[in-house]
Length: 249
Image (tube, one colour):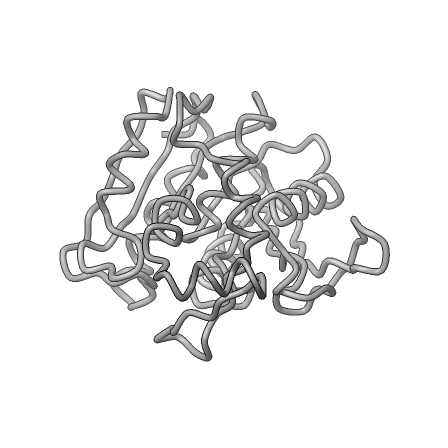
């Protein structure tokens, strides 16, 4: 495992495997890390194919330094950009983003310009702080955010997850669904229709904002938010491998 520092005293952990371009960069979700089932599945595909692969943890996540509760979308997008330029400067990039990692990928992609080969987004959650979190806040939640700066939301994946006023306020400064998204590379989206956390309608809304004409959405009727079953991982693998051809698609 390698480490790099973007902010003083906060070391970012990443796993780099060299190989052919494009470099496949996995962007994890909120409160997730680079050792989740989807990240490891993508890494294994890259290893078998001789493809370069980069996995990493945002600050406050996994093996990286920092406190999760202090992070926000802008920080984590900056973390991702820093790790990419540390490990793969100037290389062609393919972004694979899961949930919040889909939002991070959409923020990173325009700045990559011609280096961007494409995106694969898994249950992407762009603008989730504004579209999903803020409307669901109860009056008690709003009061807690104003007085304490944090509320805790129940999660079926583990302990209650903190949502901070800083996260929500910063999210509002990084919205992508308020206008055209300057991405012309191919985009592939996988989304479960039984996703209880991020409605698949959000992926359909995203399609309308992408400038790319080469966008395909795969809806999995019984798929949940994680999309980590063997059949889901097989679909993810197919989407990723399609980018490995010499001429792309």
